Length: 279
Ligand SMILES: Nc1ncnc2c1ncn2[C@@H]1O[C@H](COP(=O)(O)OP(=O)(O)OP(=O)(O)O)[C@@H](O)[C@H]1O
Image 1 (cartoon, rainbow, N blue to C red):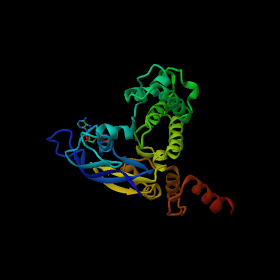
Image 2 (cartoon, rainbow, N blue to C red):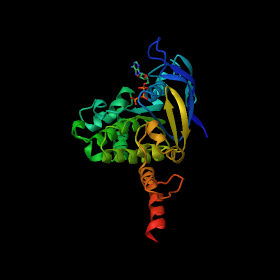
Image 3 (cartoon, rainbow, N blue to C red):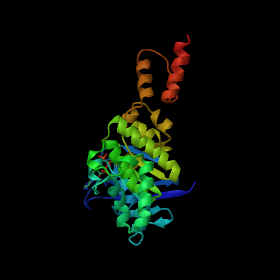
């Protein structure tokens, strides 16, 4: 496995006299092609972490590497090109008068020639399934469509890493699913590394690994199955319980003995089927 993001002993304070740093001696590695979800309560340092990775915030101690580069003032712009960020509020991310202008905006900023921009906008819109919306005003789109436009704008810049900072938290369930399914597709197609900060169980379930933050530090990490099987403790860690786990608890409360291992929804249906319905 090849590390693509590496943080070593990062401490960050917003004010010099802040007693509890936003990030405290934090070390972590994300491998190329991995999807890592970061969960944790409000204020645990997740957004701060995301902003240190592309140099929006500079830590007071520690080292950050992205790809082969150690983040410093000289290569901060190279690193920003490697890392695309999607933020929480879809309405704060628009600059273009139409969807295609918006997707092209980042490329204009990078001075990419027009003849290259045009096919890239087309491809990016195809990828997020919004080709028919190219000439529409962004304000007319749903929340999920707006976040897909934001993703298209990033894809057009050909990044190596996409960081989503609660990018699905303001969306309705349908919009959330749209965004998650697009992300899965583009991650595979472009071999991207994905870092998603989320409270949403479905989004976290797609990760290869979940990191749990508390008070600026990592307090736990594991596969989704390992983390989800912690049951009610998950709520403490900033996630809602997955449906099969909630169902297991209700059954247990009613005296039904349930498997200890984590069950996906499919696994739960199989188990219910074989345990009860066949009897
Ligand atoms: N601009 C700021 N100025 C001062 N303190 C800040 C600022 N932004 C965040 N903090 C503080 O830094 C700590 C970490 O905040 P951060 O936003 O990284 O947490 P988070 O886990 O992303 O929370 P949320 O889920 O609410 O976004 C918190 O104590 C927060 O109050």
